[in-house]
Length: 175
Length: 302
Image (cartoon, rainbow over all chains, first blue to last red; front, side):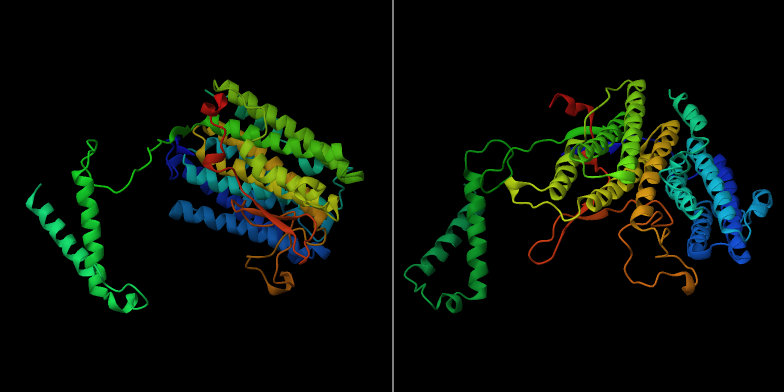
């Protein structure tokens, strides 16, 4: 038995800089939600349409949680750049959509991992961490929906393309 | 002796006299009225306090009955970044232990064995990474399985799968299925542990490094989930989506590639082993390491 106490003295609530970063993350989450919804509306999904609908709901939940964390600073509108630059890939073709979504989720994992390293407040970092864990799982589900094999295409399931640079960033700045 | 003490003794003597020669047979319950019960009880307590007060104790001056054991102070063990990293390394070694034991026993074959070998390799890399970070912070890396988790989760789970003659545990009916179920739970908990550590770590760079490993554990769990439940990759439980997309069952499956909208901190249940004579199998609930399961540096000498 131990009398333990956590020594981190980081602020709990988001700082002003955190709020700006989290606002951007909310806009991205809304754009990603809309991309999935656009694909489903176009007829993508096939036997896995419920998966696409559910993943859209996950990103909507992320936007809501960020909104509750930063309040009025939340933009409550999608990042139009993220939406428009990916819209063409989220069409009626299930496999093409799944592959596009796979790449997008992978980039979200990398971006949100980096974001956690920038956030000062622990509530924001904890929330983004809980999103990253599931975005990584999204990647795997989408690879499977795209018809890829976890054996033949293992790295497609397990490796974050930007992971190498993210690791370099996070392991060289330790005091 | 003070006047109050004398009065207490006198009151107690009266109670004793009043009960001397009384019939304490079957009528005891009815003859000892509620009021007298309280009087007797109060007098007894007062007399006890009196004895304690008049006793030879010179320590505290506080009246007490009996001998209290000496209080042992808890070890003051702050949850530092080093303690968190050492615990993370120990958890990686729990996973390494499992995959090596499974490989040695030949419990998996074919594609499942190939995946397990890949996961083993990843966990070794994670263990090296967290050990290296520990040393960069000036700590001593802990390159062993977490002893607490090993004894309460890993060893019992493996015994349920492989059987244990000494304990009378039979071999499970489908070892490969049980290994996958255990691996799914273990990988999920590994991901959850890094997620839980994010707000506990003081260094924000370490938080990113931690979740960078955690998301890879989550991918392992998702791959296993996709094997165990290939027709429903994403759970719809708890989501506000149209009924036509909802699962047509009231009970969530044991595994999904994507079980929830957010990474969970909840225990992960896993059902293992052969059924007993009642048809019931053993269920273990795996949880992220508690504060008392962490590998503090002060434990190294013990």
